[in-house]
Length: 141
Image (cartoon, rainbow, N blue to C red; front, top):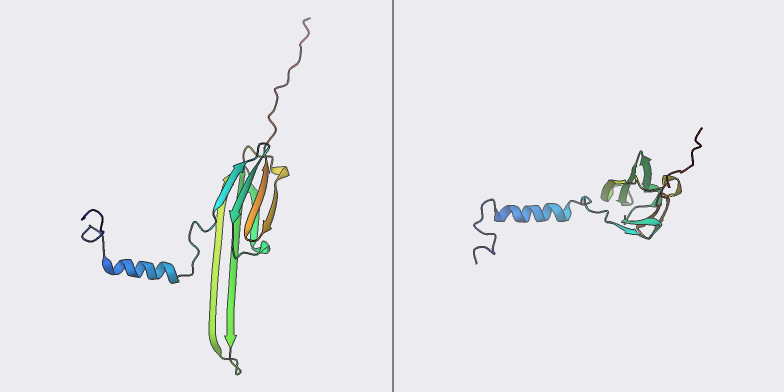
């Protein structure tokens, strides 16, 4: 039973486990894996679906830098509640950002299209057409 419970293990601190839980639950910060992304191969293209809940379309930027597609999103929200005299009763602010890059070296970057709907960013990435080596007959002189 000793191996199953964390008590008595080196590095275990019962009090810090509650502090860490409190910090993670109430921090309001977006976790690093907040933007889950699925990529599927649809034959002539790749389809990428990224979850970006809480973001507006205007908050999201797609940039191509060389052979990389970069998705970045930034969100700021303010909730101000004042009484009749203009004094704050409650004032909360939150901020979240996300940035991720994907290698698109085998994608036709001119044909990329994107749509954002219901918190899901869908990007169509058409594959490059395979280049057929040129062949020609040479004349002998």
